Length: 125
Image (tube, rainbow, N blue to C red):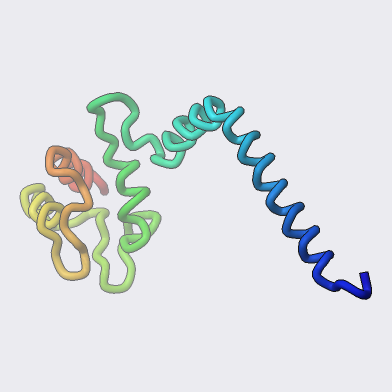
């Protein structure tokens, strides 16, 4: 191999191509299993946002979208106000959820779930 230094590179390239081919065949063979585990994995990643069709879980949405700014105990931090014990009415909370205010963007909660979310935030003490 001292006369032709390109041979090791060609062997590595062929090994890589073979590995890619065999892993692709393995993936095609397990396609149904991968798809099934992907469906269950997404439910776990959603945090149970939709426990069943049409059911809305405000706490799951808060855990996903709100705690990064408002804190894990909803106590607020920095420029972000606390969600616990807010003096805002449900209508004001619903308006902020729909349209946003300050650094908070609107539309974090789907329109049909805004009222339920506002009632849940108001119920925090």
